[in-house]
Length: 235
Image 1 (cartoon, rainbow, N blue to C red):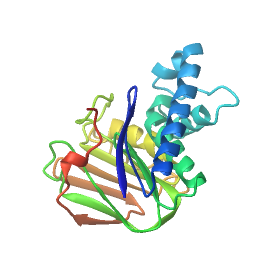
Image 2 (cartoon, rainbow, N blue to C red):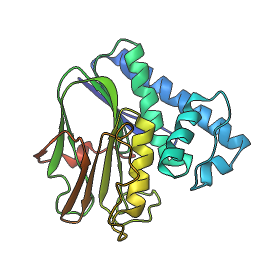
Image 3 (cartoon, rainbow, N blue to C red):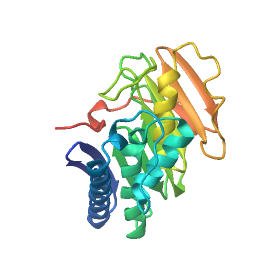
Image 4 (cartoon, rainbow, N blue to C red):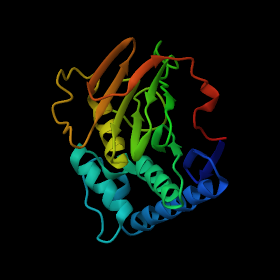
């Protein structure tokens, strides 16, 4: 198994695959996706800064995925950028012949796997951080596992949750909904899952201090001792 750290501008990822050619395919696809997004922002800067749903220009698959996910979740399109880029990377690995491939783009993960996969949960200063893992069965189709936090990382959040993890076959949706739910988790809203569509989102796992909240169809969750040195971060 090859594990490679890959950074392109502010896109900081960890890529896992069986062969180097699959790693290279992921890199090329992520650079291409990011370049496409940057070109759109250059002509329409509002696409990058709005916190509200906003349409994508015609003809852009990458921006279209972001905009569609943002509309579903009620957030700005950049809320889905990391998951969308990760998705492009794993799609390229699949197209190159990979049956196993993972891209972790700063906690927003796309995975296809011909074997079980164990994914640890990092939740900042929560006492549960680093002590839980999702036990994924083999995934013949790409799965998005995207996490947003109000207490970890530079992203803007209006809630207080330590980690909101969303599972969806649409990786852009997983990312957008992780942001949307993190914005309201811990704010007193007692029905934060009411807007979710089970046809779009498979499951949600929220950590808030010592509290856990679950929704939908989640993989098995087990006690773990997560190696925090494997967390994707800039060098």
